[in-house]
Length: 274
Image 1 (cartoon, rainbow, N blue to C red):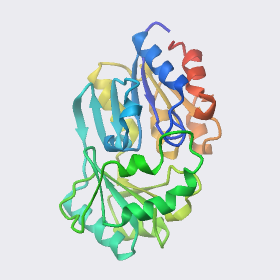
Image 2 (image 1 turned 60 degrees about the horizontal axis):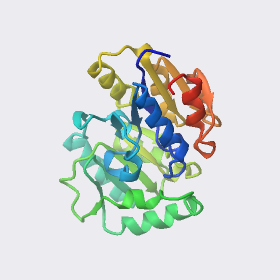
Image 3 (image 1 turned 120 degrees about the vertical axis):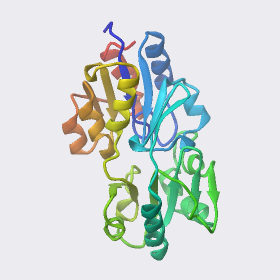
Image 4 (image 1 turned 180 degrees about the vertical axis):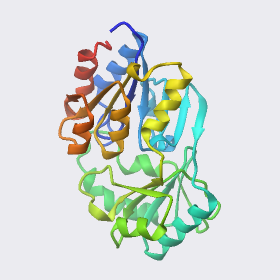
């Protein structure tokens, strides 16, 4: 493969295993960039939830907030936030039902006082045996708690502990909202992600493709979650992580091992990126 490619990597479950990045993945990213290819993280996380040790590998940019935020080489190209009226409705519905939630923005995470304790309690079991750094501390590092969130600006909402099914909450909020299940497997219907309808990773990728004057055939995307379906369908070559949801596998052209096996190293080699 001699033409320059733009490679978009999902974070959780693809580049990292519960927040920890295999050394082989770091090496693969650096080798691909040294070969002249572009490599970007394409994640549901906001920039504020990506620890420095993750970004240290070196990336050409970030498509964050599941496509709502795009930054390339330090330049912000897109930053989509909830409009004020919809944001107020979201807060009213979630607070009425005593949901543990965080409001995600590139600069910080916002939440009610006490949400840190609820998050630790809910997430502790899922990250108890996580291989190294990662888990709740990634979320809590940039958490700002306040009784008054009316002025908080955010692009996505993550629900961790809802007493009612998250589908009920999305329906109560009404038009303009989309819902995805939690990217943490096993959380069930008490967790999920609320996003602006029409915002998805492929939209953020298209901004990058235009910025670098590329074609879609030059795009490689690798992911494992339901919020990766549009990303894989948009790419010239879509790669799903083995064991992914059937809809993710159906959208992909290839399959790669997961981060537990440092599968990106194998995938990069098979794709001729290194």
